[in-house]
Length: 291
Length: 148
Image 1: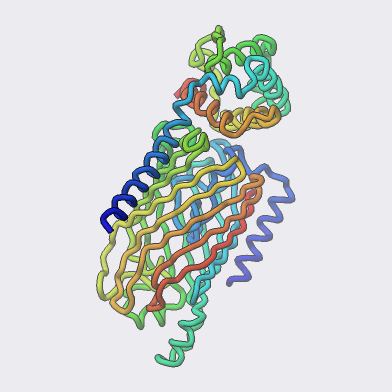
Image 2: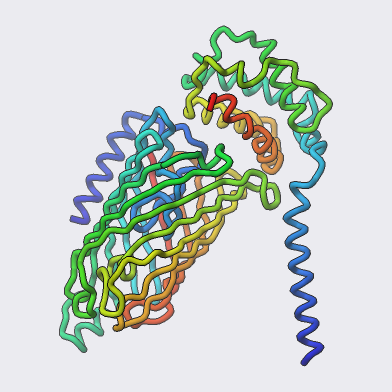
């Protein structure tokens, strides 16, 4: 499935690239990058911006590959999205979490042969009103993410309740021109209604808590110039499982957007404790193509 | 120990002061300096000229400028940017809202114009901070041009 998705993306990218379609008219870097769940945003926090560069008479698409390597885990994500007229964004992402250290623990202590956890995420985001650059109140969006955990044996063993769930999202984003040091400042706030454990990779709901909770997420980035964006993100998370505590996530990132067609993002991420392994920190790298 | 704590508090108070005033200073600078950074009226006239060349080559918006009196447009936009940047000019063209009333400008076209203005400023070596300040001064015109 992984390689099929990737091949599909590459064919799609290649085909559209061959047509030399312009990626859209919105100003450089206002498509953000792609979150690990496929929606446009930073790396961890979705923004009210819609993906790619489509303006109100255009459509655009993105393909994105990312790798996160923290102390005891690694997460690879393949994602793609389409944006219709800067009004509707649809996205899909396949996440694969390599359990590395935890794989051995599971095998030795529980006899479980599981070395990875996979999840598919399908997202829909609608721009409700406004514009991130031009409207005094910025841009406001609402979204849903349907998540399907593919390897439920381990999450079930640690008392997760469901193997699928839906996140509800409301986001606001605004660029303040000539702000700090006359640089443009991008600010985002998101609230997310969710039952997901570690974003859903450890299932949904749990023995400790099983209901929807509203979580706050925020990020800010400063455009050094129109090609370089540096910033930080914070993502609050629920703590539903008594098996192991779950922490909020944060990262600091730098994104390079040399052109509308391409962006590269690097980040230092702190994912806290994950399934009893503490203080997971490491590096996130992402490559994105736009058409 | 107490002295140490006081020192520390003083230090943080200083840091905070520097940070907050640092943030406040830059936008509070007189707009005169933006006009200077754009190269005064002559510099602005060059930017607008390069902008016009970019518009002519841009399929997204060149149709909308068909039939425009280029000389008059150049003078009016130069005066307008000069005035907005704190220079000694007065925009004498028509009211922006009335001017764009029947043009049905789309976001795509507005973005294209913004992009071309940024490129024209880059061609004239306008520093990033000054580019951002001019854009900030222009953003309030968005609802008039889009007729919202």
